[in-house]
Every structure is written in C-alpha cells, then in structure tokens.
Length: 276
Image 1 (cartoon, rainbow, N blue to C red):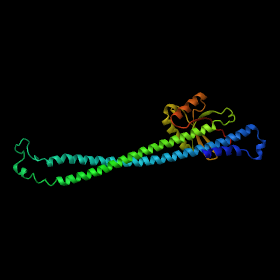
Image 2: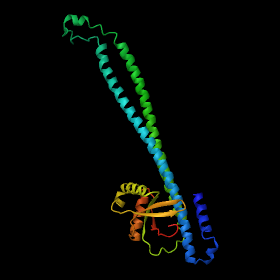
Image 3: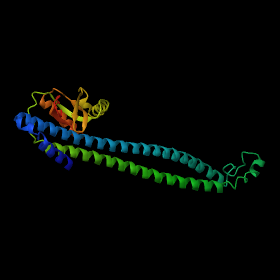
Image 4: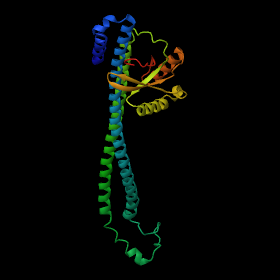
C-alpha cells in the first residue's frame, strides 16, 4: 500500500511537468492527472492479482499432492483392516478347545482319523499373533499419517482464507483512499462494473467463467465486456459486466459481488486516450 501511495503521489506530481503543461487548459490538466492516477491504480491491481493467483496455484498444487497421498493411505488402511478382520475371524476357531468337535460332547462329524490329525495346526497361532501385531502397528502409523495430512489440509485452507481476506482488505483500503479523487468529466461514456484485469483475452475469458460460476445468481444473465488498455505496467484486458445499465442496477451488482467476497467497482469504460 505504501508503494501505491508513493505511485499516486508521483503520478499526480509529475504528470505534465514539462514546459507544455503551461499551455494546457485546466480540463486537459485534470485529464492528464486522472490518466496518471488510473495507470498507478492498474499497476497496483495487477500486482495484487498476480500475487493472489500465484499463491492460489501453489496451494492448489499442494492440496492435490495431499489428496493423492490421502487416497493412497485410505487404500492401504482399507487393505490392512480387511486382513485384520480375516485374522480375527480365524484366530478363535484355532484356539477353541472344541475345534473339530460337535457341541454338547457328541461325536465329531468327521471320521476318527480326522480328529487325530486335529492337533497338527497347534503351532499356527504364534505366527498369526506376530502378523496381527505387525499389521496393527503399521495401521497405527498410517492413521497417524492420515491425521497429520488432515491437519495440514486444514491449515492450507485456513491460510488461503487469510490470504483472500488480506487481498480483499487491500482492495477496500485502495478504494477508500482513492474515493475522494476528483475525476474529470467522462463525456457521457458508458459505465459498468469492473470485475478484474488480466494480461490476455484467454485469461480474461477464464476469469469471467470462474466469476460467473461463483456468482451465478448475479452474473448468470450478464454479457461480459472486455476492454484492452495500456498502462505503465503494460497492456491489460479489463473485464466489465452490466455495461450501460442504470447506476442503481450497477451499484446493486457491485454490492452483491462484494458481499460474495470478490472485488467490484463501478467505473466508466476506458476510451482510446492516453492511459485508458
């Protein structure tokens, strides 16, 4: 924000410092100052937009990696639980003294030689117990990893919410500091709700689709307007909605989008003049 204040002060001070400024009319002077201020605002907005986009892409990449790891852990956990269930089902039948006999003291349902061979499986419980203990230890470790992953995802979501809140706060402070500027007459230009600025038309189109999906009740029936502008930070494509609507309608769209957590500002459409 300090950088923006210096940029605005410099733009307002240096705009038209040459000798030709002495020959300018007050109206031309105001237009030149307004163009310099608009360029400084676009530069600040572009920096903030790139910062948020880079941070969002990093968090999405981390979340995808965490989701893949979580899915792998869930799959291994399910396999271990199935094996443990199988072991638990088999252990009581091996340890039961009545294994191979009919309940109630009756004769076994199998021939006599089969009962004589019954003691043979006796050594089996020891390795089964060892396998069960190892599986349970691995399952406990996997659950600990899963808990850690869940905590990491929650922290990433919290960080993203904080970053978005900070970006919104910066835009609100920017608007508050610039709301008192005296803009020259726009000559009857159409107004619209400025939603964002992008480097390319493709990026602007993708941004419109995202915003329209996020605010479908507000922007679902709107037609976007893309305006190319040249600023001190380079060329940009500004995205507008509601162009040509009455002021009350534009204000309603702006307030609804802000309530949804996104930037919006009612502005005149740029013209082909300097800094437009």
